[in-house]
Length: 286
Ligand code: ADP
Ligand code: MG
Image (cartoon, rainbow, N blue to C red; front, side, top):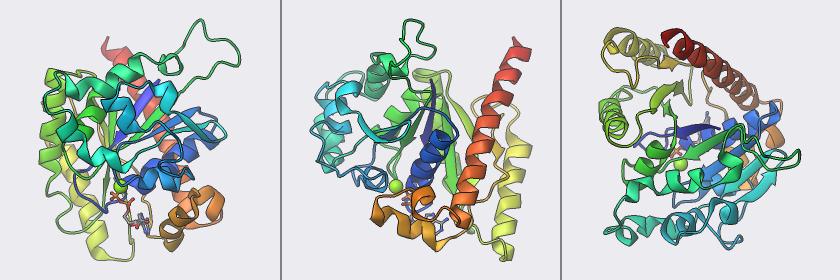
């Protein structure tokens, strides 16, 4: 299973919108997807059409109470499962304050789940399998984002192009390097996706160039993000994307002909391509 954490410690940059619509786009492209909501606000859960609290087992119960991924899993569409969040998750830091190995809890649950074990040899024809997991992170670099980074192979970073966009990026990269050093050596920055993009503005294009320049110039000795790309697909600002969550629908159900649907389908295509390219790089290096 491929696992992608959608992270940025800033709020309002497009993490949740990207997590949900990317997850659905991947499912529409034929992948079997599990969307994990690690934000206490539970916006991804709602956006995917699942009522927080309606399912008895949440991502909180999974992390803190030792419940399994299987118990927390809800089907939310064709080839799409959701691990719903719950407001309880806002107390996770306190609940786990004295728990040894508390950064590794999500990873443990994933390792204990048959549907997550890629290429499950023994899996029967109708056994549940996840090809890809998408993890929606909260707007902080606290314990929940650490759990996501400890569990994921890849981080996808949504950025909103305004003049402080690069500000805070180094903190995220530093945190990723720490996680890679200590608990998850596989962790890589998959790339940056520019969200709420307004191509008509000079600022958006300048920031896009800055971000590209940053990754082109300085990645030499940083294996964690040396292969990161800025995705060609820009997610344009589109009111339909802001409306869809309150209907509990992805952009593909809510407004299939919108720019939002077009952009997230294109992003999913790039994300799928990136996996193939990165596998090839690894094979050549071996
Ligand atoms: P985060 O999860 O990083 O806090 P969200 O995905 O919740 O960010 O996005 C913040 C707000 O902006 C939400 O109200 C969302 O509906 C809206 N939004 C996100 N992406 C777009 C877009 N491309 N165009 C218009 N509105 C967007
Ligand atoms: Mg969010």
